[in-house]
View (tube, rainbow, N blue to C red):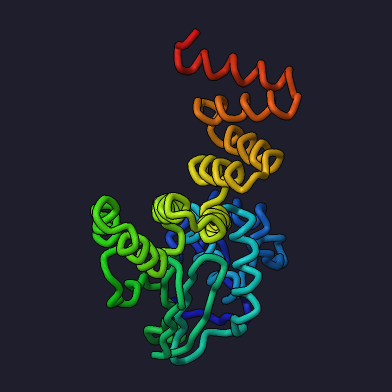
Length: 278
């Protein structure tokens, strides 16, 4: 699309360049992702950085990134954008909260994490711009799920090798929640309690309020003779998964020992309801 970029881009221009409907563009403006100027008739006028930000917002939203994180990422992206389209083009990539802009053929390879956004902005001729999807870079990393299955199969025969295999999974995919669960459990079973605690907490930082990670951490805290901390962790696990019967059982027992009689009764009742026991 050839045009005088000093005039900015209209809603119609944005629709053609990005494939977005008017409603979506207006929604991005109202959500604060971009702040276009106004023309003489109060119409929106978008800049080149606005176009890139909207394309990035669209891609991040499609990747199910929460709006608050999208806003943080876009602020970082905006700080790296030139005001006009460079002659050799731009490449925009995002991994988690990291958004990087590179010009021309320069490549960026993240240390960890999963690609959630990749696209390229080019100038096909005539002073215009075009947006292109680009594939993520090829990786020599092992197949994560194959390595996870291998680790699971090793648990019965060689727990140490299974732990190493789970660590390899986490080197490739730092958000593999099941790998944190299984590695932490194996370390706990082998008596390496502090390593297990570190593993569970790392998993919770990466995976959020994951009920199984929280439950396993609470069991570990009991073994570390931290009953009050364990009780609070069981409560947090139940906020994530209210039907987790074993958490109700263990929390009821802890509450009884801590002389929290009413809470203990509530959790015994929930446990009996969920398991059908009397």
